[in-house]
Length: 228
Image 1 (cartoon, helix red, strand yellow):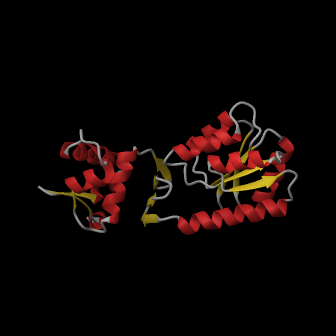
Image 2 (image 1 turned 90 degrees about the vertical axis):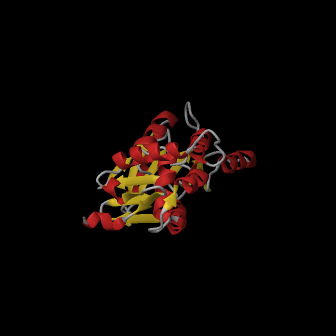
Image 3 (image 1 turned 60 degrees about the horizontal axis):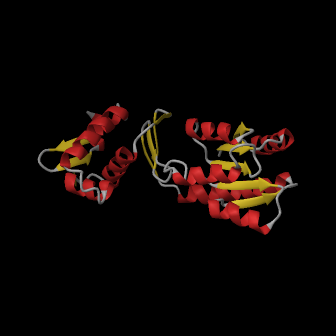
């Protein structure tokens, strides 16, 4: 299986080695030489794993990792640090930032590939996915695509969609959705759910019709609506 991998390093020789090693395995590799460029790729592309150098100019690899772990859509992406730093304190800082593994330079291509494959295996085993025709939801990564096109959903829009799908055909009341998605936000009422549902239907078209209104109760994810 092919995966999208982000490699970030200010050393062109290292990037070329990573590219050759991973593309030989059939993966698609996205490159960046600094942290700003890396964050742009993370926002624009669907990345399955990130390989980060710690000592980057400007935004460090550690800071990139920290920012990834603060964002819902990025926090589950496995991170491997590749660095020439060998001090134990540097290793600990990397893991504290949320890194999953650590490879010291110089490294062998076989070692890097083995670690990449292990991280990808772990992440795909844990991934929960919902698919219906051209509609796909990756719950762990808060990622939704329609006909291969990635949608940008707010945290509450995604939360409502997730709860409706997980209800497995049962009706989810407005009160239930408020409790599960809004939590302790006391300012929110049933009307807040209706507003999010309206936006959600528009964003996931043509699959918006699967969200059926159950008058006086709430909403239901009705897959039979696709046959209509």
